Structures are given as structure tokens and as C-alpha cells.
Length: 390
Image (cartoon, rainbow, N blue to C red; front, side, top):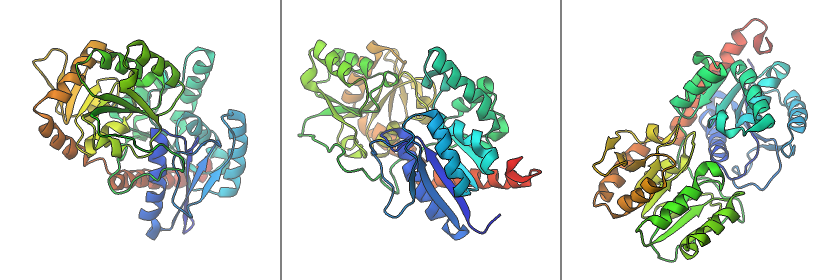
């Protein structure tokens, strides 16, 4: 192995999402922590789009400008890997993951992939979704290491997609503790106006269940506003829904916010209404600033984060570290949960427990775990007959 180890962090883009946020934090932290060992870390994006996160000044960012095309992504990434001579490529999200594994034999790098959510839901339906899931089933088992953000997700990849258990590692996402994300120019700024509110965070897509949240909010007795931070294709439908329930004046959609802590620190509660999750970053971010949380107990993520779950006398609600859990896709229980979490005398108790639980999800811990997986994958690849090209 050369004295300097070259690592590429590969992702579709730096658009506003949880995987993008984690990758933008992790790449410079890996470079900083591993500097005595001579690690050279580059950041590679497949697409050119509006960048909601940016890397520190001077950090190498390669933009391949494939614009969503699998074929252009393959062609441009193959060309870049031939010249980059990386020891390992750490990728995020299915398209980048599949290309990482597909091209590892050509370039000789160790392919470490990070899966953030359930492919059964994330990759869509119809023929296109079936083909994408087939690619995952064919390629993920060939990765040198597969990082998942929840143990339950690892079990899904093992049982349904054939990923060997010995190649799986669970690494929880970091939150804003040692370092905050750097927002790109032009991102939305807070407009709190001193009014009470509950907050939700995520892309405006069906998986996040914001339609359920707006309906539940309309049924609740809470007198403040609902603030949903994020952008996406469901904006118009959500705005129309708020108008239909006659709460348009109380539902605010400020758009994408790179650092939601400015809202979370002042909110009465954080609400996670998702139909499905991998690792809900915003949930841990809310807990880290002591914001009481209400979360739908959807598959993967919430129950694993919110340990110590106990059934309450109030039907359907469960007390957890920092707040409450409710059944997924249950509008009535979500409405009851909003009332309970905003009116309970246990708010200070939940706030303190939330901070303690979130303290374990640090950037330093995540970077150390990723570095260990990368080093192990590189070493095992070199030990194989013919090196990593085998």
C-alpha cells in the first residue's frame, strides 16, 4: 500500500437530505482524524444540482455532472476512478452504491457502501423499481463492507438481499455536536416571530407522512403553529391540504434549512410522522438540543433510537427516551400525541433524557467507526489473491 491512502466519498449530490448532510460532515472529519496516517479524502458527486451543503474551503470536490442518468454516471465515474487511483470509495444512496461496487474490479478500490433506508420502499414500484431492487440484490453482496444506520435494516439486507452478515456494520448517524453543517448561500433563514410552534423536518415526500401530520394537527387541541422544514414535490399538495382543513394560517413551510437547530431549540416539540425511515437524523438533532419528541414507531430507526420504551395509561402512546412513540400511520394517535407531548408536566424530564440519549451520536464516534471499516476493507482486499482486483 502507498504511504498516502486515497479515499473518495461518493454521493449523488449535495442536495438537501439526511445522507447528504452526513456525507458532508463525515468527509472532512475523516480527513482531519486520519491526517497523521496520511489519508487524502476527496468528495465526489454524480450530479450537478443546487447544493444545500458545502465542504470547507480548500476541500477537494469533484462534480461529475451526470444529472441523474445511470449511464452517464457510470461513464463519468469510471473515467474519474481510472485517474483518481483510490484505495477505497465510501458511497451513500443506492445509485452511488451500485456504481461503486460495479466499478471496483476495474479500478481496484475497496467498495464500502452505506445504505440509509429500506430498498423495498425507497426504490419505487413498477418495472423501474423492480430493476433497481434487482441491481441491489446483485451488487450489494459483492461490496467489501456494507454500513447500515439501524440493526433492523441490516437484518433486512441480509435476509432479502443476500448481504453476508460478516460484511455488515451498524453505524448510527452523527448529529450536530462537534461541528455544524455549513449552509450554502441562499438557504432559508428562521422567521420565528415569537409564536409557539411544533416542528417537523424532512423532504416533502410521501414517506415522511406530512399529510398524516397536517390532518393530525388539525384534530389536535394544540393552539400554536406547525412548522415543516424541508422542500420537495409534495409542497403544493400539503399546502392545499392545510387549506382544506382550514389551518393554512397555522401551517408554515419555510423550505430547506441546513441547520434546523435554530428552530428545534425554540419548539414546543418535534414530531416525526414518517411512514418509513432508515435513521431519522432530525429526531436525534431534536433530542440533542433537549426538544421533547413525538415519533411514529415506523419500521427502522425510531424505536432503536428511543430506548426504554414503556406503555402509558393513555391508549396507544408509549413513553420513550425524550418523549412519546405512537403507532405508525395512525392519525388519531398522532393527534393525541401532539396534545400529550405539548401539555405534559414531564416535559423537563423528557428534555433531559433526550439530551443524554443523543450525546452518544457524535461525529467523532461515527468517523472513528467509518475509518475502522475503511481500513479493514482495504487490508482485506490487499490480502486477497491478486489484490483488490480479484
